[in-house]
Image (cartoon, rainbow, N blue to C red):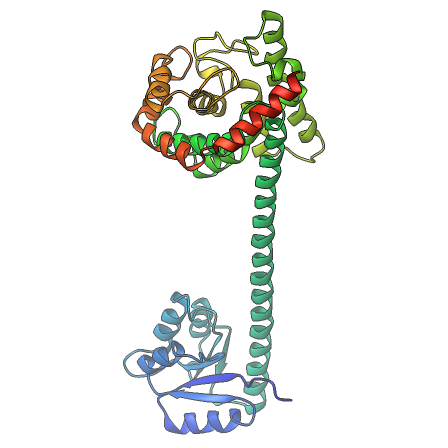
Length: 379
């Protein structure tokens, strides 16, 4: 055997002479275990180290070989062990029944030693090949899972990095992305059992929404500094330029999608959010003036998250509003600016929004630094 592990064969037979004959033939090549009845055979088969092959007599008192084989093949931990029937039953019907129960071979008595050893060896080689293939498949599956995880992490990093690129030019402060990402996630989770949203807000889609949210304002990289960083109120012409950030965001993501061989769900979702998060429930938003359920669910969720965070955050043109006032303003927009059911959900978890705002609050230093940069760029 050249130091290789010796296979173990379980011999199941209630006749001592048969057991002696079989173990005598096998012990020079294999380790052997013995069971003289069906109950003991099942116990041994389920005990580590488990046998690599079972030689099973059919005619035994109590539990016969057919029943033993049936139980072995029904149990996940033993169903992979090959079973060879050894029996004096020579009818074709008996052989057919044994093979139908899951046995890999059927040898009739009296036993021919060369035939027995040849068939045992053949079945053990097949089992070794199956085990090797199973191990290889398990290893490949682990590698696929590891690679999938790596790609998922890379997606997260890229999305946040791209979103941060837009924020680096915006007077908004650094944790806006993290906060809105969390707001979208908990709001979607709150709505996942709602009849209007249940089919869309699956766990997979909620994760996708969370990944996509950082790109909601990616289009702001295309807005000129003198408009984006203006501390005062925008003129009508300037506001028209600012509104184009939704188009710029959509176009950037479409360009990214065009380089891929197939559609990627998280980019599709990101495109919807970037393009439509400024739409309003009553149709008074932009860029297309969509209304009601025509607005993508992803964009409606983002609208609630984005407006709440804008209200509670310091901007160059306003101080932060208290949480209570921000909640009141969103409630006022129920059915006009926002999907009414989403606001109901928001109101029920507004404390969780506030907790996220506190957890990812911008430091005063960061706020002042950002404001200083903005003023410098605007002069």
